[in-house]
Length: 269
Ligand SMILES: [Zn+2]
Image (cartoon, rainbow, N blue to C red; front, side, top):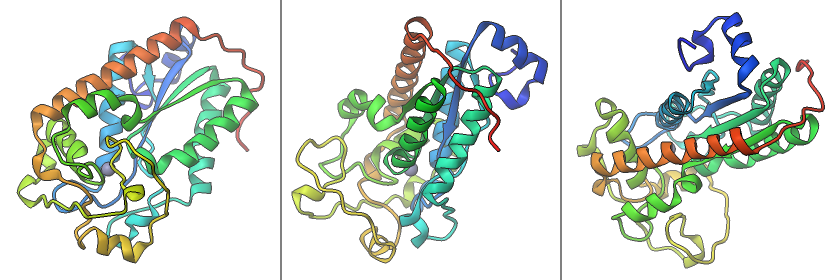
């Protein structure tokens, strides 16, 4: 293939690819506020970069990136665009159904938006798996790169939230030209122990959805939750490389070990 990106190839290139390979990565993110130091497109940019490198290393294709996700709480800040969760489920469903129709059997959804996109993505993936027989995985940095995240984290508990340590370090490595670290503000607030949202702090948790106005207030009217001030390009590089390595490891495992029996192929209508 001339490019790992599906949209940069010709239809007959894809036809040829499908004679030998059946896997593809679908990158998805979000366009939502990321405080004053990171761009709105951060989550999608992360997904695009990780998907592209993982695809190059494993020799598989990547679908056009899905730039938008589910981000209602970030609507407190201008520039954010959110899909309804039903729209996101349908979008992912239709994209994957189209790919399955052409012969793709193993679809790896790489989610740069972390936790917020997961409920709609899991619903779409479960429907697709059961209806078509295709193998669908969802790879999310918080979970697929948990070990390295925990190892390199330097902020205090509560330091990894939104536009915080981990994604700021990551962006300093992959898109330094779009970061403005001097504008980064620390925001770690005392909360009931059940309400901590730092994924690297183990403990009992309770889920309470965000309210737009309260979210804005809690994010200091800036949009940050956690501590981006300790972020470094070096840690971003370690995080990124391990993240890509883990995604590639999983793709290889699926290529070699997973048998797929497609039951149904149909055009989304
Ligand atoms: Zn983000």
